[in-house]
Length: 296
Image (cartoon, rainbow, N blue to C red; front, side):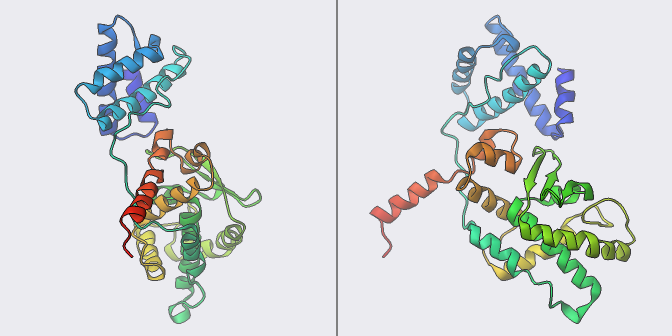
C-alpha cells in the first residue's frame, strides 16, 4: 500500500484523509481475501455484494466514504495497468442525509454584487485605496462568476490568465481538480486594466515582485478576502462567506448546465460531490409545504 499512499499524497489529500482512505481499502482487501479474489479482479456484481456486506453494520454516509475510497483505489489500479474500469465510479448509497442550503443567492443577485462593487468613489481619493478597490472588484468577479475560493485565488499567477482566449486556468488544490474556465467579457476588460495598470502599483507599494496575480506580502489571502466580503454584505445582507457564494454559484450552474459540465466547472473530482448540490428534493418539499400548509 506504500505506492498507493504516495499516489494519494500527489493528489494533495490531507494526511487524515489518506489514512482514512487506506484504512477503508484495507477493509475492501480483507473482504476480497475472504472471497478468494483481489480488488484488481473484482467485478461490478462482487462490489455490490461488498456494499451489501457493509450495510449490515454501517450507515449510508459511512458506506459512501468506502465507495469514495474505492473510486480512488480503482483509478490508481487503472493507472498501474492492472484494471481497465472503475466499477465504483457512479455508485452511491441513498439515504445519506442531504445537505440543505439556506438563503442562496440567485444568478441576478450574484451579478449585482459585481456591478454594485464601488471603485470610483474611494476614501480621500488615495491612489493605493483606489488600486486595492479595483483589485477587489476583479476578485469579486472571480467569486460570483467562476465560484473560486480563497485557495484558488491565492494560487493564481499571471500566466493563468489568457485575455486573448478569455479564459482563466485554475490549478488543482487538495480538494478540487484543475480546470480552465471562461471569463465574462466585462471581466476581461477589468482584468486587462488590473494587470497592466493596477497590479504594478500594488507591487511597488508592498515591494513584492513575484508572478502572483494578486501580490501579497503575507500567505494569508484573507487579508484581502475578509474586507471584500464585508463590503459585499453591505450590498446584500444574504451574503455569508466565500463558501456561501461558491455554493450559490454551483447551484445556479446546475440550473443551466448538465451535471457533468458543472462537475468540471466546479473542479469536483467525483460526480457525487456535484450531486450533493442538487436542490430538487428541497424544492419539492417547499412546493408540498406551500400546497398543503400555506402560510397565507
